[in-house]
Length: 180
Image (cartoon, rainbow, N blue to C red; front, side, top):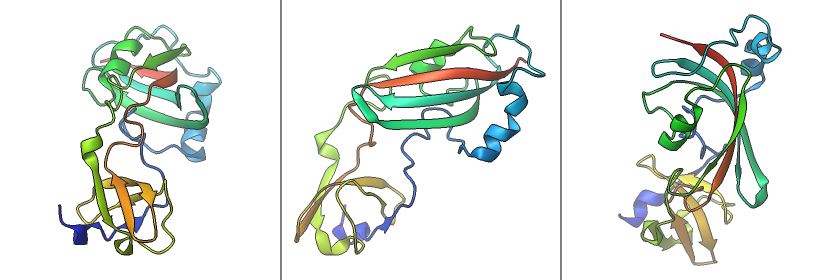
């Protein structure tokens, strides 16, 4: 990779969890849209998740041992289409509307081990002004990197997923199941 490619724009949001559950963004409007389901109205509690089910879940993912990192989202996926992490997909089979479960995922089951070969040393002058360690940047090729280290002259960019090498605990609550 050539250093000039890394004239990156600082990201305003942290996009590291999109691959966990489908990638749909959560917001108040989504939670309000599922308000009847959250409160038990118009939901079929007998529907269980099977291959082909269209599933709506509320989930919270935390990094095991790191109480400061907590991500929550509402998302939809179709069971069996591998739209979520495979290990998580296996753990939700048979769950019903209203059911909740904690799923522990090893690094290998989530974002893989941390690969030291996915780091790059570059000149700090190629980074946007105000960049700090921990910032997530996107290069001109659309690749995301975390600023792992930063000095006055150099920076180390880490192209691993920010959650690579970390065990996750995902709390999943099934909001809706539409079976084929």
